[in-house]
Length: 105
Image (tube, rainbow, N blue to C red; front, side, top):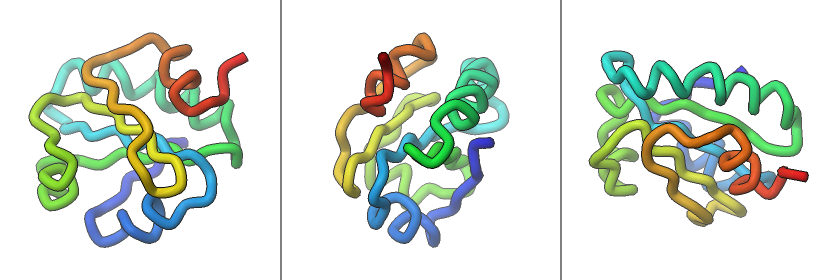
């Protein structure tokens, strides 16, 4: 299951991660964000401990959203060893997220 994270947890959970991390920047009022939710839940289940999948509500965590220049949601950022590897804006096919995580076949 994708875990909700806050600004205060970002460094510990994302920047210091040793596995790839997917962070979904979203908001509850965003229709496309709600469409993306089930896709990310599937990915979280499939990747297990190979990667982390987090959701960050941009309304409640404006500091981190601002740091990464989030102006459109949903925006998914893939981090590898704490560095931005890829930024995907809008809803993408599931395989696109898996590929960005380096976990596609």
